[in-house]
Image (cartoon, rainbow, N blue to C red; front, side, top):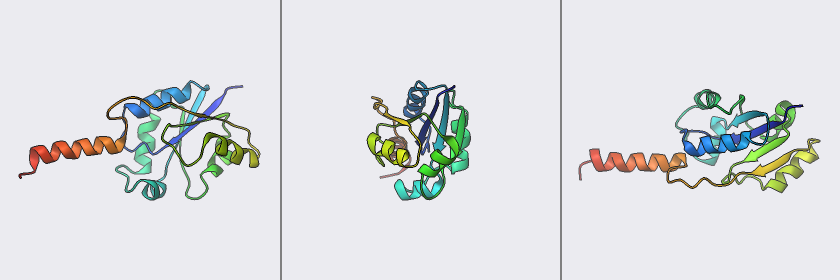
Length: 148
């Protein structure tokens, strides 16, 4: 029986950190399903998204290790995992802090689903983050186009 892995995230501006994360997640199983945070969730957690959830889902669906993409629901984010996907493994990014690995395993076990949760290591790179990329773009823009 194939092992199903779930990874979650915003994936607003795709960068090498996302590619590293998704490739590392896929190593834990045969099928990788990615849950894209819906626009309302992104607004609550990080501020206004650059791309809509539909656009982010479309881009992520074209990344090589990804086998399926689902846009997350508003409300309890675990519902979609338990009700629809039923993974064997959940891969957490190094900076995803809604749950610890053990807290998430326990919450899912309470709902009747036994899942292995792994936390993936941080990628050592200067621009492995959408907000870092946006900051760099703004800095370049200001230096080049904004008169002093």
